[in-house]
Length: 348
Ligand code: PEP
Ligand code: MN
Image (cartoon, rainbow, N blue to C red; front, top):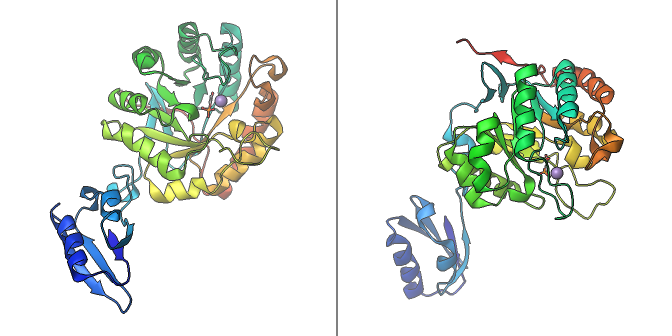
């Protein structure tokens, strides 16, 4: 941390600032310029309270040097993290392939889920998505089928072999959802629900963490840090569009977030082009852009009959469009030096 002092700061004030830093066990280094003096703090700056240092007489600004996140940061690991999802057959996020999770936004019933699971598997998806507990902006909107949907998801996994990702909204649901699901999704609206982040950090299930609607990249990484700090390092980050002034798309796809996250963290990063654009015709172009930017995968909404979906059908692909998308993704993956990720058998 660097402390910049105001011009004309007295030696007494400089001494008081240095003493405040040194009381925490850090050393200081003084650099006197013509106008002002800069105090370098040497040691673990996380022990310092930037706000209270900033309030001392003579301090103009306090500039942190280290990142506030630690275990998720790139430097913490020698290699990138591969997140394995599933049982005897697993999808592997972060192993340099492009892994696609697909399925309905909400599980609306048994038949529609089974049909969607079969079709997305045949199209090349490696994970089945489907909401059982739905975070809806309106309390009057369809809230999901709950535990019944979890049972359908388990049945779809048994039939197709696809591991399942589904959202958990509340600490009280974590145990139940973890009983059924292979991967727990923390949705955009819950990215800063710290008790929930800690709770999913305590279970041994991989987590899909979506970026909050107005969360910065740093806040997303700090949310992941909550999970990893509890001992669960199997976290996949998801850029799903953020809220801006633009109204032509449902959200604004922050494509730069992908390379920035890949630079900052060893965790895999995927993109949700369905939420980012909010329209079926935008899914393919945003998916191509995601792969070009270095994404480790995609999560895509697919519905047997989008026009009659119980929520947000306008952003879901039908089976044919999903098949076309998957066929078109492969050359983009190839151009990015990747292949499409498939389920991999785990030796017993
Ligand atoms: C979802 O994927 O079903 C979902 C609700 O996403 P988000 O949390 O990104 O809105
Ligand atoms: Mn949503």
